[in-house]
Image 1 (cartoon, rainbow, N blue to C red):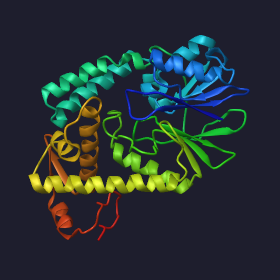
Image 2: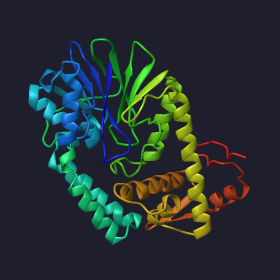
Image 3: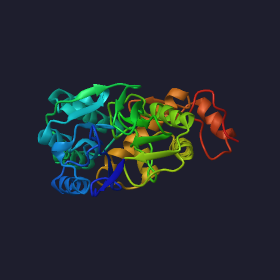
Image 4: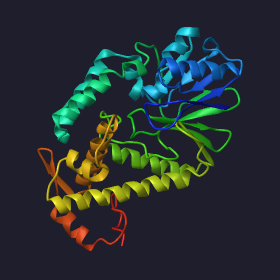
Length: 334
């Protein structure tokens, strides 16, 4: 297996594409769908004697353009089979109805979050200009959790890892205790939940389950979609889970100070002024936390405004820890 690192000026950190050069020749992810990324990937593959036309399969961790964007070019060159989880498949296929539904949900949520008109218009324009990052119309085959694929030197097992997107997966190398984590587990940044894929219902709850699954599997190494390998995936999953507990406590404190607030206001208190794609990610993540706290009974909502419940206020008055409990039945840290 070879790690190919591609430049990425659109999202944080270089993208990684992973090459299994054998019979079959398989890529995990394909990189950003831009001319610059295509040239980088073609040059990097050539160092191993591989051209786009030689690739038999592309296994995608999820639909985002920086992971699936060049899949179409690779398929066009040699007929490679493109595989993706069924929950992300319609977007990778480029089905107009799927993209229209995604955009409609985004627009509805931008208003529900309280995003101001200027930021909303700028963000929508940016997303309209991002079509080049995707493959367009593309034939794909789907897989589900637990499916396996022979990549020559090992077999990859699909581990559904939703939260960041509905169809995000990890690929477990069954002959060794290692995993391709895509954007489920990153070495520096915490994967965005809530804004990165607005189709996901209760994204924080789903992502916490994904993190719990990583802890239970206790992998020796994770190969992420961005940056370098993670040598302690269990510790990293625990750190991210702790981070979300810290963020939830900040959300609770914002509501305690303000009395009530919408997701845009909470995002501003958490992240400050945002630019570029973070105008989507910030309020999306704030909303994910707020809705999760509603499910836990700590927060209530009415027409986009959130406030602490009486139980939430009582728990906050007694709370002394660094994190807020995010799982049902978890004790308040003290």
